[in-house]
Image (cartoon, rainbow over all chains, first blue to last red; front, side):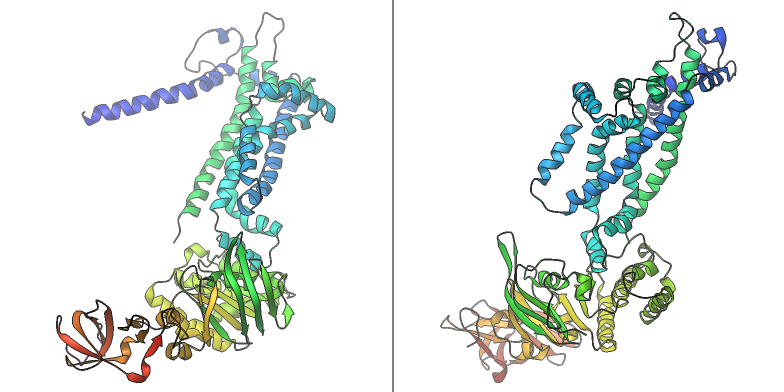
Length: 275
Length: 330
């Protein structure tokens, strides 16, 4: 096959994948800048530029509060899952105890339950804990899904760290907490950033639990809030506002991934090259 | 500044016993080398002394006090690991300072102490560098620096030279010998599988095999008067020739440097020269006996032999060791 065909088909494939993954978001961005009737014209290129939709979304209702809710829930989930996962992974990777493998696989199997299967039981649990309609209910329930993979990834990563470094720290008089905080954490941060980011994205995007456990508008997180944006009547869907809101909640996520992706790669290569 | 006593120490991993009732007394300031093949239990012994493994039974005393349940810090040990085990994210200075934070030492005192230690090991100019920016030999010195900065009573080395290339190994060996001279009160325990390191560094060598001590003695005692065939073969390089007697009950042990090549028909054995290795200062001659045994002879560079010659082998009579079937001396 001539080289130019190979090359052309390669770039064609890249283009298809790129369009498929980026076009929906691109179309949301383009639409969010339109106003009035222009929204109902199909345009593939930006034709007008108006910030009206953004203005409406951010000033009407409690969208600002809802973004804050999302930030607090996602941050809380990340911090608590990482703290728990670091402790758990230290035990699971370094301490020999009976039933360790069973425990690891149990943790993994928890993440396999469909959300809808645990929803009813979880609802009762959250009611009885008295955190219904509180952001804590989301922090609590999201950890069902974030903990298994943070524990697994961090356990694998910690297993790969040389035992002798830990022993050197023991000889140097470090306590288990000091070993984790002063020796392991600095070495593990690429893994922490990766898993933390995934947990953050999961918590940020989650819909079903957020829809079920929150009763009032001011407590809702953004995915639910956006789904509930309604127009003046039941026959009107305010597409402009919905698109603007979607862009507002997506951009920070993309920014986070882009910022940390570089650091993840830098951290990984720095650790990998040994003299 | 420590005396070490091991009394009937045993160690089990599950149902497997890896150290069998080992007893040993080490004096203050002594340099003791544990040597043995892999799986002999020498590293486990070191880890038991360090406090990185629990002792299954027996008593470990440091300066007369039972130390079985003390932490490594309470035992006053410092350790140099085979892989150096430097903290990869800390620079050389912080690596050395990490173990000092528990000592009752002011910041300026600690700083002066770290810099002194670094100067004495010639790593002062690398204090700001990370371990990955250093060569193997430099890392090794940092690992030693991290250990001595804490002024340990007991200084433990776990095969510290095995990751270095041959030339650097000789240099570092000399440095460790000098270090011992500079710290005459510090008891040092050193584990290696390399009998040359053991011979050159040790005040006393402990030869281990299958979790038992085979023999304890000065390098020369072990060389001239090994208690059994295992020690005889393990100490000395090239290793001792073991020749089966005609009665097939006893064996004769003779070192390659204690055999003379003589004319065919003379000497105790005769054989055919199978291979010759000329090393410059000495020549190693491999002689195949009629019994198919291979005998190694070490001769000066002045002797000329050629391959396939028939030669006689004359052992120096008072250097001959006799072993019984079980490998014991007789």
